[in-house]
Amino acid sequence: MSAIFNFQSLMTVILLLICTCAYLRSIIPRLIDRQKVGLGGIFWKCARIGERKSPYVAVGCLFMAFTILFWS
Image (cartoon, rainbow, N blue to C red; front, side):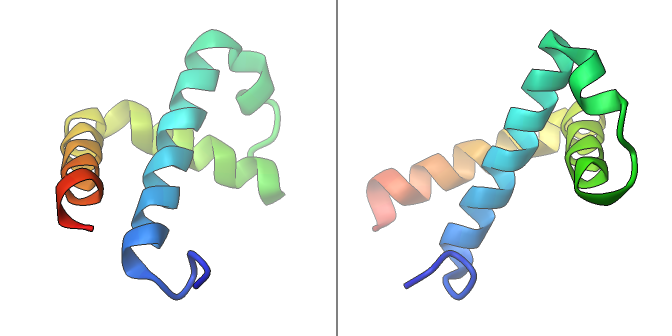
């Protein structure tokens, strides 16, 4: 089953995308900041969510890790 049709996999992919974009923006800001429209804009928005909502993203990552390790 693909990640689009499985809610748990979809949430895992979204959380990993947010965390990866926020990490890359902290290491190489030019890479994410130069394009704020199109596909690059999606990565920029994910980086902003990761920076501004970091406690919620961290709780989401912990919850997903718990469900992946112990629930499945």
